[in-house]
Length: 210
Image 1 (cartoon, rainbow, N blue to C red):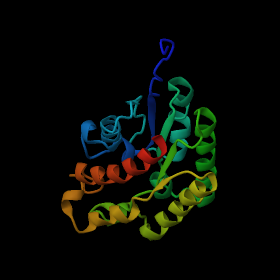
Image 2: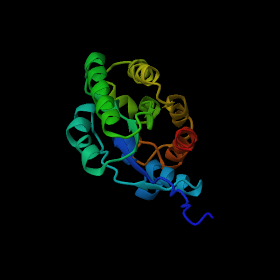
Image 3: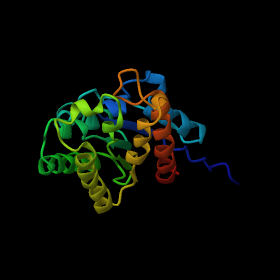
């Protein structure tokens, strides 16, 4: 009597991470990058996840992301996206207003091009200023204060859109006192630090995907 019953096939999570060096994970190998770890751990949690690509690049700003990464939304058709962007905007002196404008545009495009608008995770900018080489990129400005202002913009957009926010700023500040959390270049996180970020990101990802 149940011959016509078909078991529902689990949805495949087609994942696209968007960002800069903190998403391509400069300072670590590809296998140690947090998007790869996240994909692996989602599958271990019985969520069928495929990492479509990692188009993030070292030095990318919000404008670079708009020009080079957003086109992949229509090409690859992801149904889950993470976004970690903004550090290079701040380093280059992009105003908070222009950063906000670009961030809003990015999120609008992402939400417009994925089936479920809620399957987006925002991640705050880490505090590169605590690393040995970080002070060289502040141009005399207060790095912690400046990044906090940009992170407030990210947080506000997350709240406005009711999207999950993973705050790695405080966690990243531990790089100040633990050299093993910093890559050989003295600026980027090490594989160990990226792995700590991934634990926080995984926690939020499991909530929205299960």
